Image (cartoon, rainbow, N blue to C red):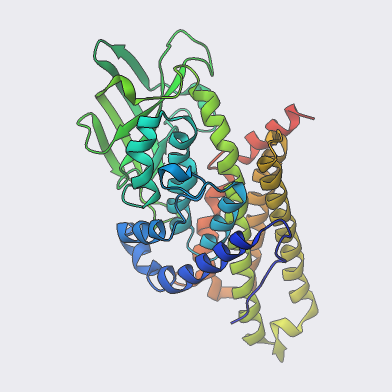
Length: 386
């Protein structure tokens, strides 16, 4: 089996290199042999979260005093990249939504009591997180969300709906964005709340049957007179939009990591196939025009990965990276489409057959130009800052 390796960035210290080695071994031994069954069932076993939590991988970005590792953004990049090398986008997405895109809100903005209540169990993989922002009429346009949270003498009541929520069926801790000031325009008047699984007002309307990411559960949720105590408010009232935008920066960075890992795996598989497949008296690999096509997309994949690590380092240094991370999200996700579809093309008819890894990876890749900020929205964020 070919192993396609990008050069290891010099900015990774010994601890992060060890993390990469350990996650890669875990992916090879624990995820790859089982993930076809998870694809069929549409569910990742809770035990997988617990195993990764026990190894310390789910809480690497969270405070040490609450069970985390206290590490920086490069840890998220290494984790995302290696999970994506499994070739199962649904597994990688479910795990990184938990580790980086939902529970991180509590780690960054929660009170001591909230962190104490939720972070140790989340870092251990005992409870799984989901972030609930997208609505039927508000996806990339977060400021357009309609879900309403009203203050009451006993706390809050939420009514509304969310859609396309990863970990929405089997999650335990839901970070919910709701409008607390209906008179405020656009991005103002949005707040975040922590909702626990089992709250009578939380209704799982349906689990989506998706084009890709089939091993991760994705749900439509309704909030019907959902009652919360006053301490369910996360951070300051009215600051939710800015919290979401801040966490989107990390989500888009992780997308770059998912792209890097997926590209590496697709290229590995395709090199192997091209070395074996005979056509016109020689292997595909022996035909210059064919192997050059793979070389070209490998070069683009390397560029996307380099930008990912550069952005992670800039974030670690406290720099304003909204423009660069928006560039990364757009370029990496679109590059991935070219990589996986080129690899599928080079597999010929085999690449069109369900059960072929490259066919699954092509389906899984499609969502990354949409989720976390569509390419068109990302390019507009870049244009605003030019």
